[in-house]
Length: 388
Image 1 (cartoon, rainbow, N blue to C red):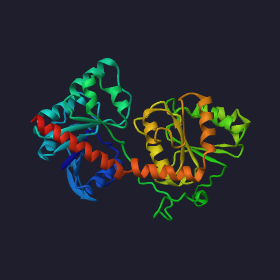
Image 2 (cartoon, one colour):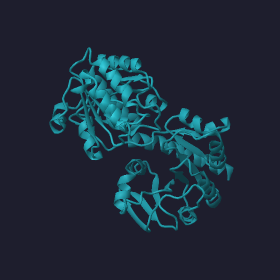
Image 3 (cartoon, one colour):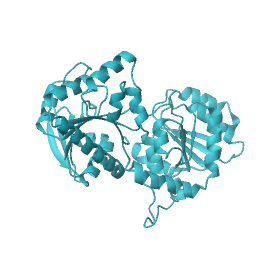
Image 4 (spheres, rainbow, N blue to C red):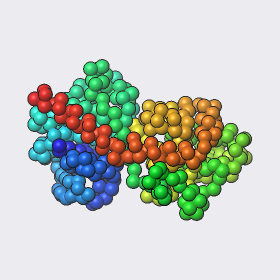
């Protein structure tokens, strides 16, 4: 089986092939895991120059054409798509749901035997007219990767398309925890070791990793955390963020509260490779998202044994074993958050942390994603060949 992953856009600030591979680490990670399952995987992306090389058993094609790094929705990367056709894949895995004109052209160019899977990588479905156009053009696909079936139904309009929805986790992480003895079961990380590096303290320690924007909803999180402090005055909340859209409001809310003032620490932007130490310093991971395609930060937290207290949205329900790990709360509802925090803190921490690590390994890791994806690929190949 040969699978070709394609990316229409690239960041023009990325000037080397190695840097671009690192940028797409979630895709390269599961591509490498697919190789161990006997799947030949190629990653092809538009780039400012032509180049081909192999890394960790994955072939990378960098393809130059006459378009800019990010092109308009009506522009057609014909040279790029012709190169994709020449690779003669069993499946072309398209990493864009919204560039439907380009995918429609791709279907016209590809061999009849080649199946197309389109993967959703974030963003809510557009208005009715755009949604109708995308659905019409994307109907040439043999399958759609969404984190959950519910997300797919938000995008796809016709019930007959629902059977094309193939749930699979969007990506995984290379972050790790302290594996001292995994012969029988994961061992809860010695938080004190990591806390010497990060300086984090508290009983318990809560960690936020996400944008300070309306979707992540940090203000509701602060309301709930303030209430929690009545019974858990030793708790501390550390917040890592890059987008600081709501930073003034967050700072004002913290400053106005004597309770929050010395218990909430705004860490700002931390280099991604360093965030692992912060996950390994925290007991609980908190987030107030109203919508997420998947949730890379939550995936990283689970990998490091951070117990989740996150919102009751489709992707988070799946990633927390339908709320069995930690606790879920209703977006925007401070009382629901306080109840969830209380519920999570009542569970034995070490056992819950180990359960998070095990669930990640079995359902959210690169190996787990590759197992599910390989099955989906086989399904669409069979269906495509029956049509052709």
